[in-house]
Length: 426
Ligand code: PMP
Picture 1 (cartoon, rainbow, N blue to C red):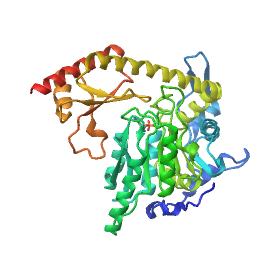
Picture 2 (cartoon, rainbow, N blue to C red; picture 1 turned 90 degrees about the horizontal axis):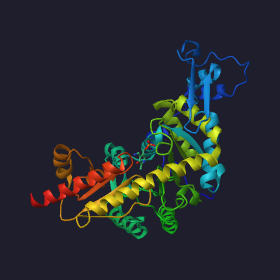
Picture 3 (spheres, helix red, strand yellow; picture 1 turned 90 degrees about the vertical axis):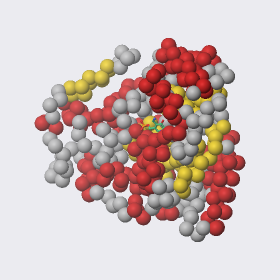
Picture 4 (tube, rainbow, N blue to C red; picture 1 turned 45 degrees about the vertical axis):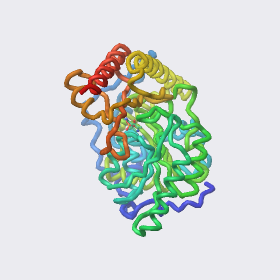
């Protein structure tokens, strides 16, 4: 990688003290050992004691696969921490196929329990208590949950319909720099969290030119980008712009993928792609935290990817995307019918959410969580959950269009209109 990055400056001493776990390292070695090799090393249970005879997975397209005998045994057994080796290989090929990152050989990946697992562990790897971190504002509430125990100083970067605004990022950094000059205890941020395609909660997508500007600023200020790619394949106006991973000439992107929104959320499968040193440290954390992600989930997905190949997989993602696009359109139509004049919104370009601004109401918390839930039996998330400062008054609402039927969405929007009208006369 054309990088001058010294990752030791990013891995905090707490994480730097992690050391390989010998038994986990042996699991890795034994996985590839010749058949005749004898191991009395690993504390693996004997598969003969497992009560499962076979697992058949029938896909909706008519294809199927069955796990039985030794194949089933290993699908129910411990794994090396990186993940099920055939799946790690497939994910590596898939990530390259989709993103074609520069200097691919300097990157590695690891399977995680969904992207949330990777995000929380990578933040823990690099963030000290009280450290600053740049975040898109509003931001995915799951990140706030990670940051809270760190007492992190969230530096909010405002967004418009095209995601975070580069000049605002630069201004935020310059302002923080001045504060650092005045207060020697303060540090400059070394991380930014971005959810650049179909963001949660705004549904915004950062266009390519903006991505390039943001990347340049991150290079200038030596910042690592945590790219949360959960909605990359749920982008409604053609393919998503290239990821930050695709633009990453300097090795400053940790990229979080997930199968949750496009295959199944309960499989709990995601993967993190990034500079080798950082992925190796993450592996040490996983070795001690949960050993590895579910073998059965990984074997299932590997079989699916083998059966389908990448083209069919991406075609499936396209079908998923079309499903949500129809829901998005129904939602916008319902809002046009019921909320015109009461609220403002930007039509989401991806993801599963619409971000609604209520006119003439200072704060929506009580309206939604008291009157809405109790009297109208309808739930939305008050915008507070997604703000860098959740304690401030907030007149935004997040509505998810993923699960409810078009009829239910229409009803929910009419109930929201009633709630807002009532709120105004209260
Ligand atoms: N990032 C974003 C933006 C999300 O919306 C979610 C789930 N709601 C996640 C990450 C976590 O997803 P998972 O752990 O299931 O991959």
